[in-house]
Amino acid sequence: MSNLLKRTHMCGTLNISNVDQEVVLNGWVAKRRNLGGLIFVDLRDKTGIVQVTFDDQIPQELFEKADSLRSEYVVGIKGIVKERTAKNANIPTGEIEVFATDLVLYSEAETPPIYIKDDDNVDDNLRLKYRYLDLRKNKMQRNLSFRHKVVKIARDYFDANGFTEVETPMLIKSTPEGARDYIVPSRVYPGSFYALPQSPQLFKQLLMVSGTDRYMQIVKCFRDEDLRADRQPEFTQIDIEMSFVDMDDVIAVQEGFIKKVFKEAMDMEIQTPFPRLTWDEAMERYGSDKPDTRFGFELKKLNDVVAGCDFKVFTDALANGGDVRGICIDGGSEKFSRKDIDKLTDMTKAYGAKGLVWIRVNEGEYASSVNKFFSQEQLAEIAKVFDAKVGDLIFICSDKPKVVFASLGFLRREIAGRLGLLDDKQFNLLWVIDFPMFEEDDETGDLKAMHHPFTCPKLDQLDMLDTDPVAVKANAYDIVLNGVELGGGSIRIHDKDLQAKMFEILGLTKEECDEKFGFLIEAFKYGVPPHGGLAYGLDRLIMLLLGEQSIREVIAFPKNQNAQCLVCEAPAPVDEAQLEELALELDLED
Image 1 (cartoon, one colour):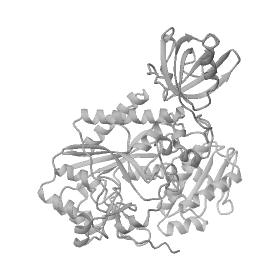
Image 2: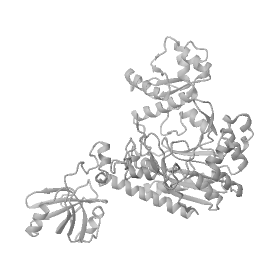
Image 3: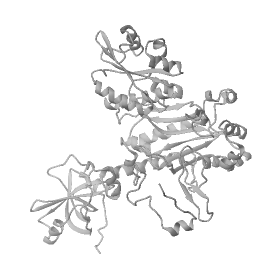
Image 4: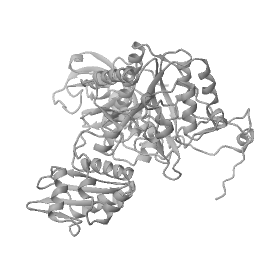
């Protein structure tokens, strides 16, 4: 068993002020170089790398031990800090080096299956399988440390503002929240199941009933849904709920929090209050309820301009209650070839578009995919709507409003990305408010809650719940950063009669309400304060602040895109005895 050299400093914290000090470092060997009379070892810990030098002034035994070191060996080193003659401006410790006087080898290491360097460019699944090695990279350690810092800021901020952190249960009843539940069988109650919470929504409302007044929690949530870059089956929320508040109160507290995060974690001052867009305005201008406002290309409506034209695609869309809208790309004509346009058109089909019309604004004429249906004068009228100039490129989509918004909303951001306009050092924050209360199911036409059935409608529109529920707006709000929803919330229904009305509109019978939400309905009999809240996606927030492209980069042990943990190989079968204890029998026939 090796003797422990008690650490005095972290590798990445040494600088010119430590010159002539004796230090003890512990860490991993990142690299060893033998130049004959000198051996250089790059020693790494979570704070960074420092160069350690073994020269011929030390005992031969120590020199030979240093020569035996290999990558990822774990060592302790004692030495004297000296100023470097040849400085390295690429690392923070590049002005100094440590001349070793002692070395302890704690453990050897086999050649790792992945390189421990930030730009290793290795397959993601291999990185996730050997995540404990991947996490040794400087970038990954920085990401984890940054995440820790933001979580601490959150706890300190909400504590200072009167919030109590309360843990809510992980084993709960399955309730409808929009995604599939992960369910857990009960051994004590055969045939019955717990669910892992998709959010603490019902319990944080119960905490308001309980008089907690201001609640927060850093909480794990679980949703069994298809994955993508900013989605995981288990994710973390900063969850908030407040009593005796309206929307402006909630927003003010949250803006204070975000301002503090930018100041303390990013050393950036941001302006508050953040801009607010109604849902209608966000959709009309950006085709998205989480608009990215770092660039232009805003949507323009063309219904009046193309009404009565000879192009049947447009007139049929208008006749069926649809829209004709477009975006104009500044200087886009020379930047996108016909082949590029065809690829973009194919990509929009994933959002329901059947095709795109394009118009190039050339000197003295308009070139278009619909030239035979439109005169030059008609194309000029369309271009005028966009204030288009020579060299611009216009894309037009016609269909149901939902399809048009989704297609053009995707297209403007895709094009902005290709043109290098998505600057991850620019942070555009805004609120989207006044969401629709309900949306119609595409297949059945039934109404469903756009957020959840506990969201309060605008109180001045309550009379419309009976006459025109689709037109009713919700007292809901989302905070958006660079086209990504950071968090969402609402003022909740606190009146039991209004809550019953909401369930009725959603087609839930009293029996179904009692079965799904009975414990909340019961609690509401005993006095409920007006309350509202919000939940942030912590992983998304960290991802965006660090300029990462996937939340897997800011989670210690994430799942891959097939929802597998490659480190521990979960999910995995369990043995027959465990199934018998749970009164479960598998039927895995195709």
